[in-house]
Image (cartoon, rainbow, N blue to C red; front, side, top):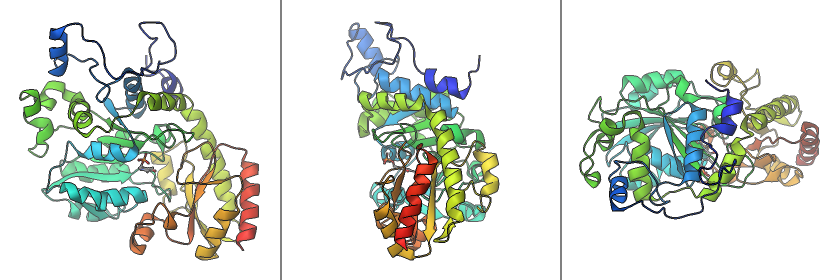
Amino acid sequence: MAYGFDTLQIHAGAHPDPATGARQVPIYQTTAYVFRDAEHAAALFNLQEVGYIYSRLTNPTVAALQERVATLEGGAGAVCCSSGHAAQIMALFPLMQPGCNVVVSTRLYGGSVTQFSQTMKRFGWEARFVDIDDMAAIDAAIDDNTRAVFCESIANPGGHIADLRAIADVADKAGIPLIVDNTTASPYLCRPIEHGATLVVHSMTKYLTGNGTVTGGVVVDSGTFDWSASDKFPSLSQPEPAYHGLKFHETFGPLAFTFHGIAIGLRDLGMTLNPQAAHYTLMGIETLSLRMERHVENATRIAEWLEQHDRIAGVTYAGLKSSPVYDRVAKYCPRGASGLFTVKLKGGYDACVKMVDSLELFSHVANLGDTRSLVIHSASTTHRQLTPEQQQAAGASPDMVRISIGTEDANDLIADLEQALAKAG
Ligand SMILES: *Cc1c(COP(=O)(O)O)cnc(C)c1O
């Protein structure tokens, strides 16, 4: 029987604890697991038997979360990591080698722009930034050394929606996977695998946990990409020396990427999510659909109100009829365009800073996707390391404020914005 999303967000991956019958997923606060005997230990270490060895690789609380997110995204498997940034490295690690490149959208979270353009260089990986709405530019940027295309489904901060199907078609034609950062949408609003994505990454720090308590990430694999169709992905298709010549794709089929992520990625990069964090995220996901509905309802109402305000020069919310990507909402996120957008103030930089400083109910923080409403001036914070051109392309120019609408009473949020805009002058 195929359960609906509201049922799966509570039950997927969770089973009554075999030892105690505990209904809620226990926090398995343990580093290691006792082997039945030496033969059992050897089989586990050889990946001949699936089980628990050491919590850098696998942990039952984390495993429940992996299964839940994979189910909600419609994937075959998932690997949880210590942060959204860790998830991005973990997604690329099995695909890339020195000299390889990834074609990346300019409309990304500022931290991701820096991670891709600066830090990945030190691994010998190149990031080629393109306008993700320009299919010819994506196609032109791809060459024999390209191993993936990377974009955000709903972009942070501007809320721009990518034309996932068109981008997936370009990646497909080149025989490479599309990786989609689905952080701002969450699987309740957008399911990138249904639109052709191979891998989906999340900062679980945001909507999945949903209340600003955890730093975490996840990579979900669709399980449908043929890693052996070309010689581009030897880590997955060729013998792995560290496991006696085991070939991940041949051995694990649709779970090849997931097993590689755990057996090589977590083992050697060590970007592991801890069980306490997994517990908080499991708690958060139980109410994901309820929260996302309220985020969307509040954001729609507030974006419409802000658009009419005489101190506002523009609102980027994709759920507004005036948005250039409004027609993509019905196709890619029919339940709404999430709760994140930017507003452009007529008073420019100074008015933005004054507005942020004057808000009382909104918190001035570097986070999004919280039940609390949050605000930040992206250009001077999250997108600070970027050049003015990069800021413009990312949708984070200095005259804009990013707003993450929470699940509070919308009337209270509007009243707070009203008084802050009055002071911003
Ligand atoms: C926050 C964020 C990240 C990074 O996630 P962390 O959990 O902070 O490492 C990546 N992508 C997007 C869209 C984000 O908003």
